Image (tube, rainbow, N blue to C red; front, top):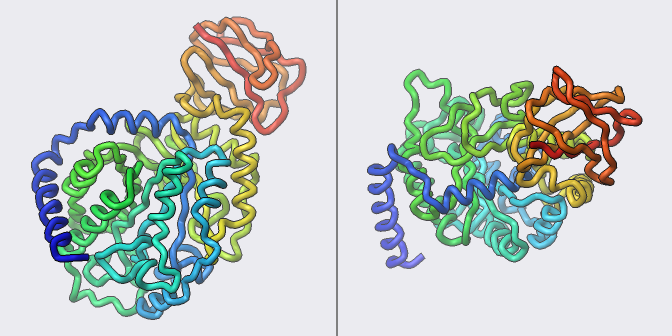
Length: 438
């Protein structure tokens, strides 16, 4: 990077941060941002990709934290990272075929390795590996070509950098020097990286933060300086959405609310439990058990389970961000690709009952869930052993029929709501009945 460019970036950063301090407490989304929120909500399905040098160890993305590893020894893995089978076109094509509308890619995970040609550190895929290619650049260009939104995951923590003030994780990492902790320096590093991602890689749909929970046990609440950082992002790209996987009530300046491994409001699993806000919602979930590639984790959820999870998430008015952990050679696992293809086949027929819908009139039941689009209410029946189904509806039903073949379904108004009668108990992955309401 030449001197002039460095000075220019520094000036821009300073101006943006000053402006951020003034505007942070009064965040008002722009018209572009509100339009992006609407588009995000209507998409309902995205694919998460956890990929970095940790894939070489085939032990998941927390390998550096979970074992007593020397950070310098771990970093040597970069010199062996040569994902010669990585093909952005194949990735994006497989994901598009699933019916997903966006990709969220891990630009930098907790191990601190950057998956783009960052100028803020040599510890990146271009400078530190024999592969030498900018993966995010290639993904961004291919997403643009194929009409898929690109979101970028970005970790707020770093187990390898000494200037990051260590929280409750990363304590098993060998070689950390706590005397060199320097939050202002680390914060500046992050903001410069975010500036790169938002100025050199085209239009980014969202920044997906993670790691805030690393300081949730501090006696004195840690100041992440989110206001200024969020303002920086919104100034660089007003339509760029901000989400933070912090497992708490959304912070001012956030545009989406994230739930991890849990459908919003169910609180049955995962790390969520916070109240549901009025922001667009997203739940992230693994396809097998891990986020990053793990050799022994071949316990993939069935296509039926994944489809029902997607539909159930839509029934809560939320998006599903379904994870894939690519192999160290750069390929998406064959089982994951097969699941994506099968989900896409189902979505090509039934996607109208998911895309652009809102939470249905009836909360999730033992038999299934509901989604709504205007005057059309979709019943997604997963498990009904009876030929009758009583719906506690206040609205008037004027017509009822099966979604796929448009066959009429008998119904009548009762004191308890509306009763449907089937010739036989509904069968299949998702037996969809459409009601026209008034």
